Figure 1 (cartoon, rainbow, N blue to C red):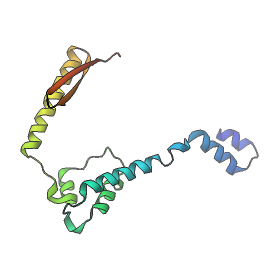
Figure 2: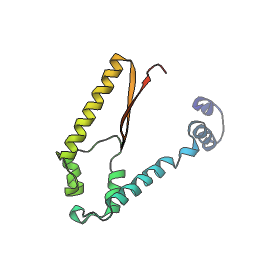
Figure 3: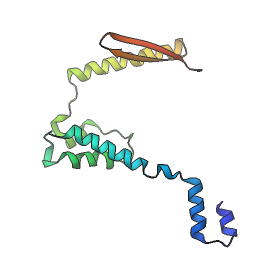
Figure 4: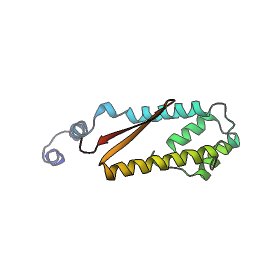
Length: 139
C-alpha cells in the first residue's frame, strides 16, 4: 500500500490514515491501557493497609509494579521483590516448600501422561479431593 501511496499524488495525511486504518484495529487502541489500569487497581487493593518500606504508598507501588516493567512476563527475583515490598515477601516457608512439592508432582504426572498416553493432564481440586482429566493432544 505504501508504494501505491508514493506513486499517487494524494494528500500524504490521507494516505497515512488509510494505511493505519488497514493495519490497526481501532477497538484495541485503549484495550491495553485499560488492562494495565485494571492490574494497577487490583494491585492497589492487595497492597492497601500494608506497611510498605521507605514510606511508599499502595498507589505508587501498584503503578510501579504495573508500569515499570515493559514486559509483563518478566519475573522479578525475591531480592528485588523484598526491596520493593519489604518483609511481606517470604521464601523458604513451609507453605512455599509444600506448594513447590505439589507443583513438581503435578508437573511429573503431566510429563508422564504426555509421554505414555500422548495427552494433556488437568487437575482440578476442591474440598473433596483432586480430579484428574486428560485431553488427547490431537483434538
